[in-house]
Image (cartoon, rainbow, N blue to C red; front, side, top):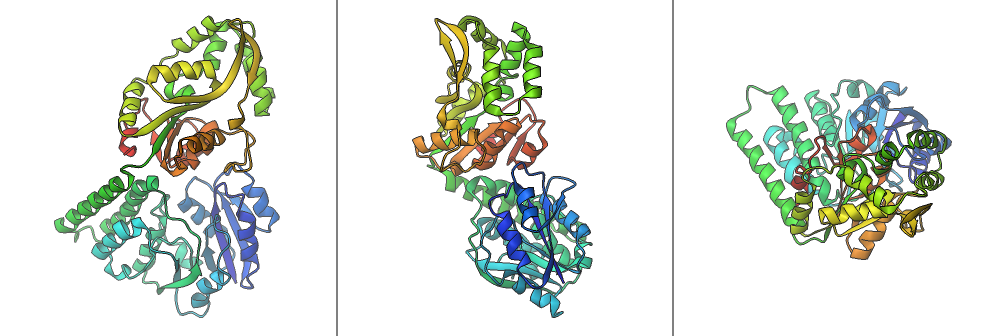
Amino acid sequence: MVSVIIPALNEQDTIANVVRFCLSNPHVTEVIVVDDKSIDETVSRAKAAGATVITSTKLGKGTSMKDGILYAKNDVLVFIDGDIDPYPPNTICDLVKPILSDEYDFVKATFSRNAGRVTELVAKPLLSIFYPELSQFSQPLSGMIAGRKAMFEKVNFFGDYGVDIGILIDMFLMKARITEVNIGYLDNKSKPWHALGRMSKEVARAIITKALVQKKETVTLEELESMNVIKDQMEYAIKEQVKGLKKMAIFDMDDTILRGRFIDTAAEQLGFVQELRKLRATETDPVILTKQIARLLKGRNFGELLKVAESIPMVGDIEETVAELKSRGYIVGIISDSYDFVTSYVKNKIGADFSLSNELEFSNSIATGEVKMPSFFFSHAESICKHTICKTNALQDITKQYGIPLSNCIAIGDSANDLCMVQKAGIGVAFCSKNELLNYSADKVISQYAFSELLDYAK
């Protein structure tokens, strides 16, 4: 019998249908969803659909796959993605039939779609150099696979985009009987332009690492030169694709542009630290919490609150970074859950084009303790995020106004409040973040208080 393993991260919209699809197959007696610490309803919906759910021991697809293998009870294992719905009806049968009939040991799915850019520009050229026997596969990076548990247990799993090509190479080195089966049409979108650099680097690293370990004494200077040529070609292709695009860069403000948080600094300077801590410890509703925190500012005048904002240092190169982004054609803005008078001050200081934030109410320059949360933060019919309040909704709103697709946006943030925005934007950047999930989900992690690295991605 067959166990299906589904690595999953925040896939609540599709996971239940995928689980039910797997369980409808007569060969499948076990569906294991390996959850990568989702923050949505992925776990509950997978369980309700009949899956066994386990939590990955470490963030990353490779670890999730390994954990699933160790937990699985059956000898034949299938791996599929949790974000595809629907699958072609015969997907699982097509994957497991060659194994159940003992014709092959490892099966990769191919489907009706042109091979991706990283496949053609990086994977296939490198395979032709180091593993020419594998260059015949039309989609070597496909993650829909099947094989015997005993062989999967011997695989060294990469934790990133290199995991799928790494499995293929390990199976080849173990002399497994390998085939590729066409499962039909699949609505599996190509990676957006922002992911090409990271994906190509990690795929190339996986192939090269395997090759150097296997035949470290036979790799020639000519082969290493070929790798450099491929890398240069990939970078050139990316640059050509992004020329002339309408682009946007969105910064969080607190603990991102600013080396601190406005409300925490205000609490320290104005003497309401304990009240703020108590609110955060007792109130979980974000709308109510926002309104209650605003009441702590009641009676404070505009001047003293602005002085608090001015006392918080900014990251040293933010002004230069914004100027360079704008010179490259980017619209630059701030999306923050702080207050508009602070974000406006910061926007003007750094030369950004706009800022979106909560509106603290003043009467005769005195804070009333009331705050307006603009509608662009709230969920609506076209929201791509299911949270009631989310910066992603504001991101959708502003990109629509400028006519810029989300895939052409860079979002930079530091905390769990920025997670959805970082995930949904074209390039997501975690900036000096202590949030493990944000760092894992981001395309780029910047660990130093400087934005210069960002410019390497902002073509």
